[in-house]
Image (cartoon, rainbow, N blue to C red; front, side, top):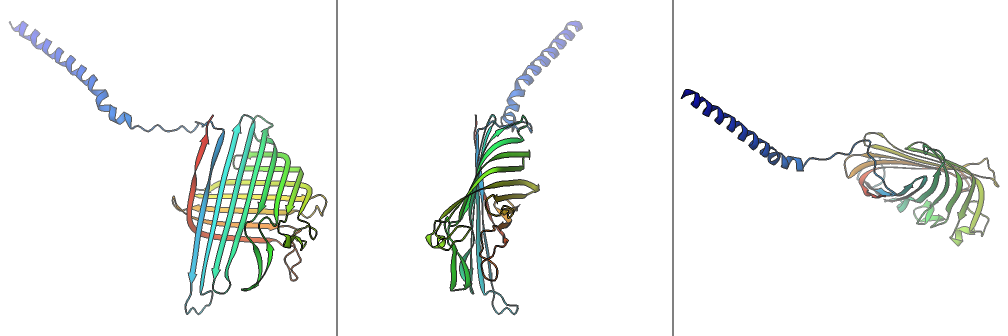
Length: 325
């Protein structure tokens, strides 16, 4: 009798264990399902996104204002400066072929009690470069480049608040460079392009300015073609966390007119990201053109042109888009 009771107890224990095991196995997926649904799949560092086209850009708008009243140190009673910067890009990649296009726009306006209102920055510049890889690493490319630079609004040289002279205007002057050369990219952030086969076009659409014989053109002439040597260096990198540096240097030597006098056009931009929408910016532009003879005591000599801006303002990045293969 005792033996039968022990057998019954043993069978009950085994059956209970089996039922519990089956119930547990059925319950595991049900309990884990909610957490499995919301698991984030992270992109691996070595993953790549295949794309043919990539586009995007960024913009910045800065406003600075100051006012004085009974201020012993002196200064402007009121001043306000507005500066803006927009950059857009479009990149293409397929096999050995690449096509990079960048366009930059700068505009600034300043208002003061003593000098009134006037622009303090006005620049539109763009570069489009098509290349074919010459090596397996893709560091050396045979490229064709188109570079252009001008402005939108009238530029004046001021003698007093109400006395000034027109010295530039829309497409007056405007410069366009067409080059065939080699493009070397030793690092992703650095590009060096050089071309001994270059033509630079200088245009002055404004008839009044054309009649003055400015910017290396004879009086009355509105355009000029010059063969020469062209080189450009582009660099962009986050030098430290939340600090991006972007630089562009263009050099041109005219084979037919004082080739030793190399024209220089350089822009430097530092962007300090404060948060998603606020940033501090600093820019420094340098231009030297032997044909721009508007400076000196008699306003008839070339000189190194300098422009710098610093500000804190609203920063907006345009959404980067991809057209995948």
